[in-house]
Image 1 (cartoon, helix red, strand yellow):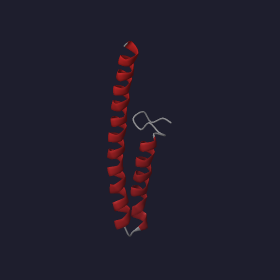
Image 2: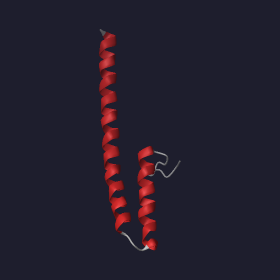
Image 3: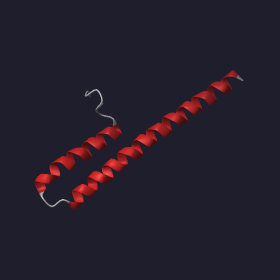
Image 4: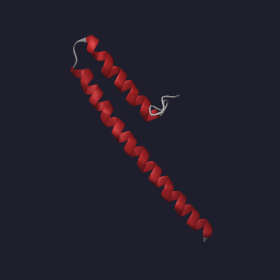
Length: 73
């Protein structure tokens, strides 16, 4: 019985973690869509630098290469 209870607790933790990851991904996906829309509507190449950087940063946050809160790799 104890093993079954342990598995249920682990399953709940796994589900919560998964839901948090998906929530974070969806939030970042909205940011990416916003940046892509800005890129599509811009004609002046000099104004594309900031949206491209923001897009790259949003992609990087999804994959977690840089911790932007603590500014370290």
